Image (tube, rainbow, N blue to C red):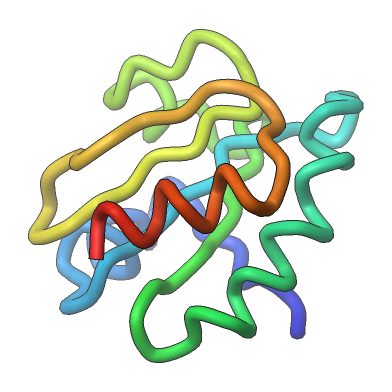
Length: 106
């Protein structure tokens, strides 16, 4: 399963107005920790399908959403529900830590 990419132009519709919990991975191609956490997010997207939507936003190609949400370093993972940020994690976390984080938010 490949994670869907969101952009500045569809961020409001695909994240803020989405009817389930959405995890946004703010990342960039040149970021080593971003590349390290990507396969973990792919696994979690399959495991949490239907309960959590996991998407990626490339900060180099889409600078507006990261600025609007105060992203200062990457990878930054933000959980959104009903258009609001519930929680934020910065850095590449292991799968167990990310699963625990998602479970607390469900």
